[in-house]
Image 1: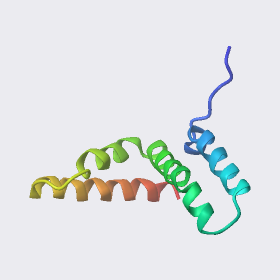
Image 2: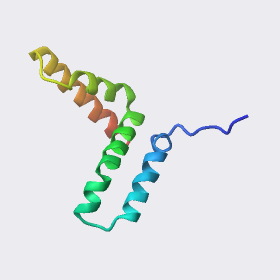
Image 3: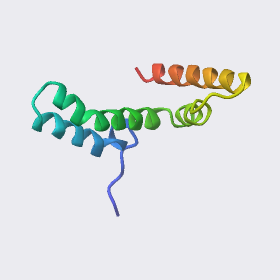
Amino acid sequence: MPPARSTTPAAACEKLQNALRECYRRIPAGLGRDAACRHLNLGLAKCLVSAACPEEAEAVRSLCTSGGTALKRSQCQQAELSLAVCLGSHQ
């Protein structure tokens, strides 16, 4: 029987977190590190948000990807607010 998997947001994103930690360890502080590790930092942030608030994050992704009608912009704003509330509940 496989071991039980943790369902915490951090556990779901563990590989990205380890890769980012390794990037910070290998590259000296400064603009070079910022540039080299940026994609991992962004990926980890997206992973943690999606793991913590999956429905809200998906709503923002689908509703806020482009301009559109006033209705779509309004729905995007509501989705962003819902995501902010969800993330706030995890602090």
